[in-house]
Image (cartoon, rainbow, N blue to C red; front, side):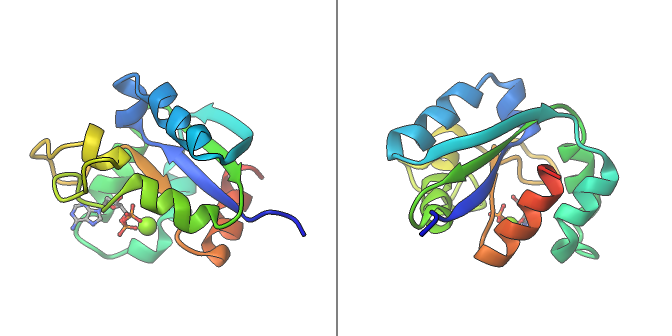
Length: 138
Ligand code: DAT
Ligand code: MG
């Protein structure tokens, strides 16, 4: 049986703030395995596909703008129940509401901008993990 896989992104705010190591440390300390990793500045096209479920929402354009504003680190991670487990490590979407102990709760905050700059992305289902890994690790 092969272990479950997920896509993790360290978003431009995480990279710019020098938190890549701290974030990946938490992933590894939890016991998940990093099996691939790349740094890139994502195109609008890639991001529009990645976030297709949010097309039409008021934060969609600011989200693409933010996500293409600088380099991100894309990570392939594996482990039993890693999809749910990384979402749990990441914490709630809103970094102000995210519980202390989580990546967003410990390291993120509201910067008063149009989109929540919340440091990380993690796939939310096996279907989206497969789709997103195909996009970022084509
Ligand atoms: P998550 O990243 O926790 O899976 P999501 O998929 O609902 O959250 O949204 C994708 C990203 O869009 C999220 O990380 C930050 C931004 N976002 C979501 N809801 C928002 C809102 N109400 N206002 C501003 N930005 C938002
Ligand atoms: Mg999401």
